[in-house]
Length: 247
Image (cartoon, rainbow, N blue to C red; front, side):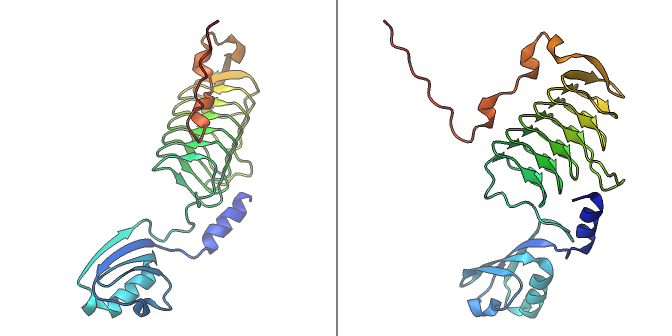
């Protein structure tokens, strides 16, 4: 989807206010028949799940029978739901926000507080660290690391025809910003706090505001600083090491 299609999708969507409502009162399943929300429970305790508007209408009609209520609102007039995580073969930590229309590759790690917008694509075995933001249609390659607080700009407002594109095995440091339309080549490193305003070739390190090439990746003496850890991208426990038999 281009930015016009995404904007049209959001503008034309039915806006909803997702709600979980806990009520106490003596009701039966037939009291909820034909409603535009789901009802779970029995006897005097029920949980109502769905858009708050029809739930609120139902509650007004049954006000005298409701003894106690508790309302939890997840959003207000939301245009798009969150991505259904059930079929993802990835590690998604609590507090990550991933909008419907995003694509998450197998073996990815999405950390707490990360925000991934509609149309964004995250390649296999890539880590999106805490509080990083991937704007609409941002594309991240395989086995990358997008550091904590980093921002890959979106393409909705202000509109842009070209999304951010991050190549395979790229490291983006904490609090770095990559502006819309910028491409970062395979194996490059964006230093922490850099603001990238133009395309970055493969295999280089960029730093500063605006970011400039400061060296080749081969020139980094401490390789641990740019290492990608496969063990963090597994979905199960690490295989046990076999003990070598002494001769």
